[in-house]
Length: 248
Image (cartoon, rainbow, N blue to C red):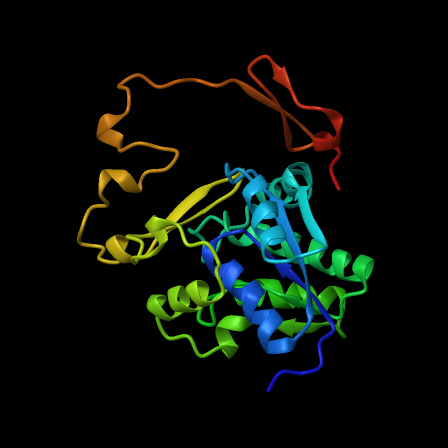
């Protein structure tokens, strides 16, 4: 049963799932919702997220550029530690979650919110990354994980809820996506559906920022670089500004 929640800060992408979560929070908890959208270099236009939040009646909307903090305080320290999951898996997606969660807690304090919410499913590691950060920074915060609570069982259930509440649904979101993509300044990863059979090569349309090896140039491109205190500071003729070059 829902607990008493007055105001919740939602990690909001502006996509269909988090827009449904936004409305579900309003309906289920009867609480005020504050949205937080982070620019982590995912390459998406963030203005539509603000517009959709406004359309759904949100009064407190935070859209913030966290790219420099992400690289300086999360990506570069991770590189220096040579941190990889099980020795092989790069932490492109997971390294961003603590930063999003950290900022949610800060916004909760700023706005007087007593709860935070995320859109991670109830079967993966993202829910753990978000929630451990929440509780580490504020042990008393209430955490709402809609995917562990609601009764929706399928994509059609979500679409039906969206249509009932006049939440815009893009045409390409009405069917099951062939795969899902997570992107930020560091990486782009694709998973699910057409990629689940390891015996099948990924179709060409899966590539986001790279191309198939057989389609790459035969001659390598050399990019000279330099570092200061184990932090990348120069690439070819470009020098990064000092905030990125101050090791913790």
